[in-house]
Image (tube, rainbow, N blue to C red; front, top):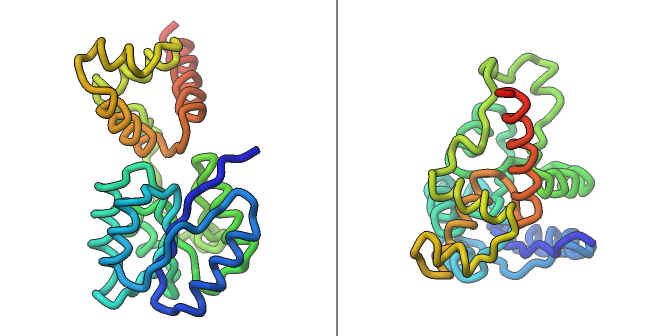
Length: 218
């Protein structure tokens, strides 16, 4: 059974927000924990709930969403944020993801498209419109793929290695001389960098990465 994701909704239109809540909670693995119509209130909800997913309107009473994305990512690194917007274009998508968003979806998207996007995020996959690819509007990607593990610090790599070995969090904390709570903070950062939401997913990603590198340098 999938983990039940905690969700925060941020929408300037209360009726639309309620409709989205009903759609999400029709799924057994999504639970709306908080709703807000302003970016300021949304920050407090994200800070207190540490949700798995935030669906947020691009246009808020305080202005557009950009400054709130950065703050949300800082206070809850493990949260996936999806921006809901009428301005559906690849340039805006790139801007949103560069600020910490995990995806973007048109407000005219169907229920199945929304659920598909969320299910993709669970697996570390971001969905984009096929038209962007067909029309050639997607930018050229570098020939050498970026490895998320390249972003991990030396300490974060050590923690992942010990977790894969089955070492408890308490023992890891003793080994690197930090508190148990600090290990939780490290894990949230690791999950965010790897685009995962659980210990099992992080171990799976790390094990695959280690096997690939072992084969490459054998």
